[in-house]
Every structure is written in structure tokens, then in C-alpha cells.
Length: 344
Ligand code: ADP
Ligand code: MG
Image (cartoon, rainbow, N blue to C red):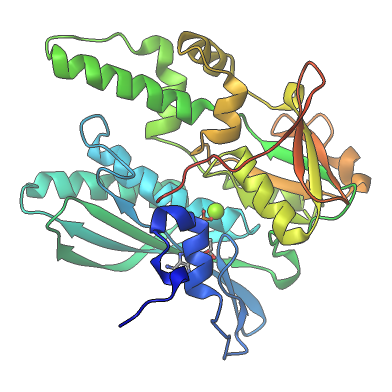
């Protein structure tokens, strides 16, 4: 069968977001319960007046994780936590989890139990019930696919497309650490391959390694926002790097953004490791990904409610013209590009 030119485009040319767009652009919603389908951190469904949130992830050995340096328990923990993060990104509360699992027979039972110990620990800490899943064999390594369900009051749901001109851009926590942790782990893994006797002292890197291997999602933020009486105008979680996430918000909201290099929150250890690798910690924050902090916008009139709160940093504001820019410390205006994680 002849294929159109468009179809011949390779997947890597399309990119992850291009592929999703191609696959989903003709989907028409049939059920009135479906409030929001493809295009946000989670789908939003309305049954009996309350919004239910659903989000799924797929983690593949050798693509998303490397068992040479990723302990199985941490892997299980991380797979659940990053999934919960998409619910918090909708200003919701994670409630139930189902887990798809494909394993090759090179794994002993103990290994699978380790993964599950991590998943169960995450469910315990995040108050989520593990309610099902599916288990099968795999010819090409371990595959984990968690799906989380959450809930949110109808009027409190926050989407990616609600940012407006002059809104303030806020991030939680600090950024760039998870990527620096990955660079350390990859470096030590290379050394270990050459010299298995090598026993590295990783204590100076404990924070960034933990950010990579055992990240935490911001379960506390939806509650904190309610306590402070702040309703964000848009929100997303930072899984692919700050640049990519800002561009999701600006594109979907039809606005632009300006952020300031000297406002981007970075942990001192992230700065030290970045120096060691001779890269800028800001590059790690913008393009590194996997920090699982939240990025959101608020009305200027809500600024006093978050001012001085140690969980929040205002890094810039929304503009009416298109394009998202970083103002550097030497006052250059650079256009933000989505160089973050691209699955393809
Ligand atoms: P996130 O980074 O928050 O997990 P993604 O970039 O993975 O979000 O997905 C963006 C949107 O596209 C989401 O609404 C997601 O449900 C949807 N999506 C991703 N892959 C597919 C697919 N294969 N089929 C349908 N929808 C998809
Ligand atoms: Mg997300």
C-alpha cells in the first residue's frame, strides 16, 4: 500500500509530542463524563459532580532506567511517585494505582518482590491504594506501566491552558538536581565497568543522587494551595525540564513567558556537581528533567499569599506576545527551546 509522504516521516523526526499529536488529533469525545481527554497531565472525568483524574506512564528498561545503578526497590518507588506527580499537577489528590508489569525470566522472584516493595512503600507514603494491574512476560527487559486515579473538586481542577498575560510564573522546590544525579551515576557506572573493585565515595553527591533515584512528588502542594486560598491559573509537573514545561503552558494557553536566570532555584550541591561536569546548572534546570517539581501560574493579586513561602519561587511572568524567553544574568534574552527529554 502506498504511503503518503507524511506517513514516511520517521518517528525521530516527528518527536514524542509530534507522534502523540499525529495519533490523537482526530479523537472525538463521545461521553459527557469526559471533561478533558488527551493533552494535559491527566485526563479529567466527571462522575456525579466530582472530577476523577487518570494518568498512565510507561517505563522501559534501557530507555527510562538502567538496572546497573538503579536499585529495584527505588525503581518501583520512582515509577509510582512520578505517576502520582501528574495528579498533583492537576491540583488533585492521588487515590488509586494499577500496575502493568512485564518481566523476563532472567529475573528471580526476589527481584520482582523488591520492585513491589518500592511500589507499596510509595503507596503507603502517598496514601494511595494499589487496586490492580496486569502481569506478563517480556522478551526485551523489564517494563513497568503504572496508572494512577485521583480526584479533585470540579472548580479546583487546574489545566495547562489557563495562563493569562501578567500572571506570575512559580516553581516549587529546586531544579536541575535529578539530572546532575544521573550524570554522577552514569560516570560511576563507566568507572565500575573498567574497574569493578572501585568503591566510590558518593556521599558528597547524596542529594542529587537521591533526586534521580528516589524522587518525591509534590503531594503537599495541592493542599497547601487550598490552605493559602490560591487557585493557580495553569499548572504542569516538571518531568522533562523547565523549558519544555513552560512551552507546554504558553502554547496551550496562547501566551508567552519571560523567566529570569537569577530567579531559578537550584540547590548548592547541584551547582557544585555542575561545576565538576563543566556545565551550567541552569542548563540542567532548563533541559535536564525528572525533578518532579510543579510549575504553575497565579494571578498577580495572589502574590501576597505566596510571598516568602519557602516552597515557592517566582521565576518570571506571562506575556501577551508569543514565545518564551530566558533573561540571563548578563541581560541577554534567549528563546527557550524544548531540549528536554524526548522519548524518541
Ligand atoms: P506527561 O509528560 O505529563 O506524562 P505526556 O507528554 O506523556 O504527558 O502526554 C501528553 C498528553 O498526551 C497526555 O494527555 C497523554 O495522556 C497523551 N498521550 C500520550 N501518549 C498517548 C497515546 N499513545 N495515545 C493517546 N494519548 C496519549
Ligand atoms: Mg506531567
